[in-house]
Amino acid sequence: MGLFFVVLSLMTLLGALGAMLLKNLVHCAIGLVLFFIGIAGFYLLLQAEFIAAVQILIYVGAVATLILFAVMLTENVIGETTLKGLGRNRWAALILSLVVGGVLIKAIGHQTFSAAQVAERVSTREIGRSLLTTYVLPFEVISILLVAAMIGAIVIAMERNKRMGE
Amino acid sequence: METLDQLFVLLKEGILQIAEAFLPSGLLPFVSILVSITAIAIFAPAVMMYLTWLERKVIGRMQNRYGPNRVGKFGLLQPIADGIKMLTKEDIVPAKADRFGHFLAPVAVVVPSLLLFSVLPFGRNMIAADLEIGLLFFLAISSVGTLAIFIGGWGSRNKFSLLGAMRALAQMVSYEVPLVLSIVTVVMMVGSLSTMDIVEAQSGWNGFRWFIFTPWGFFGFLIFFIGSVAEVNRTPFDIPEGESEIVAGFHTEYSGMKFALFYMAEFLGAFAFAALGATLFFGGWQGPFLPSWLWFGLKTFVLVFVIIWLRGTFPRLRVDQLMGYAWKFLLPMALVNILAAGVWYYLSQPLASFASAALLVASYLLLSRLSPTGTRLEKRTYRYAE
Image (cartoon, rainbow over all chains, first blue to last red; front, side, top):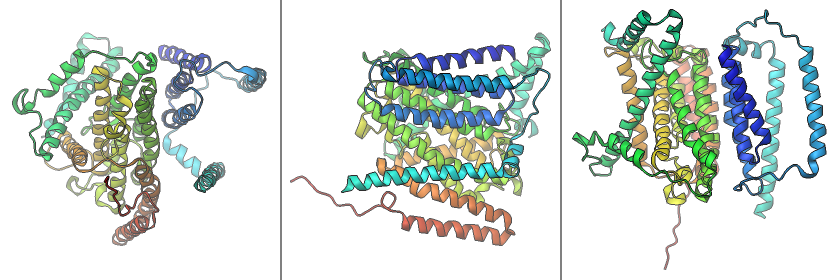
């Protein structure tokens, strides 16, 4: 188990570093995919098979695909380097990353991780049942939010189509 | 009969017993895993090689010609000759290509399509990894190949490659939705994501209690089959590589073995999806008289044959027709199908089948009438050059 953990950690860190440091946006996206797959591997190590599969399905299958779509809309997509440094956004980026990093460190610091405490293995059936009983309200609220976002996107697209048609 | 049915399982046990004599017992799980992986790693490329042969033969017959018949009896050695040719060909990389992406794509496209085989139940007790989430694993892994195709198309630095890659991405994002929704009905009925459980749930009626014989199973299978043909880029959904428009799409700039790897991923994907269709809707390895793995193989090859048959029959779709068909027809049908499955489950039997069939047929008629441009074909007008 230790060996798997080391290999996965290296892969995940390498992916994360690649996503941040590479000069070409598509290469960054590949790094990000590597990172997502590494995280899925961690879930597998924790015996959370369902979350691992969902991680691959959503993050690698859908989110990474959409990121690549967005990358295709940027300037000189077919160049060696697609990024020209951060430019005037440098200071904003610094402050934002400091804030996010601070919050994350604070949040993780609050948790105590003891090695003796082993999480129970939760089956897919139980996840499904609790989503439709205990957590039914958050589940429905998220569904409504997603439907609203989808309708909004369709309305925006329709208006643009109408304008282009005229 | 029992021995014949469990032939491959017994073979693996025999190998493990031999290994037990030589190796410490701690290593045995790894040997067991290794045996399963080796079986898949040999079986999958062998199947792929002979699928290319089958496809060329069948298409040849449909087009009133012989197909390969020079190398070996009936051209049976043709795939091996092709393999040697592919391996010895020059590997051309465009000067301006993104070397990393260009190299990564063919490798990354084959790995997921091999992984698909690990959760397929090839026969009674014959599965490499009986995961609790087997079906979800299959769907998750099958969506990874798209990214590899995109990276290959982008890395080639070729307009046609990039166009093909974009088409592949858009198509697969669209068709995955009805595909997954059509599978949901099966999961609802079985109450499990394990492929073994799904096959077990279809036992009874002398091994003919398949989900395809229920109204929701029939429509669900049709949606699933159309979605999976689109998912693996086969005709009539092969616009990402439409040679009449964009040369060869995402693999325009690939030659030799790298091209063969793309080809291999396509065939392995087609086989794996046919096998999943047989598992979900045709009772997997259930069936009378014959050994379980033979039943599974027969059902899978019938579905593979239909996929090849489609290629020999239909012309390629247009991009907008393709998208319209997925979003305006298949997706609503898949949603209605879930409702129909619920109706079938909660009503008592003769009424249940009738009600869910009526619901499905009515919504099919309604949707095919209602749908705006895209799915309904308009009368064509031709303008000829003077």
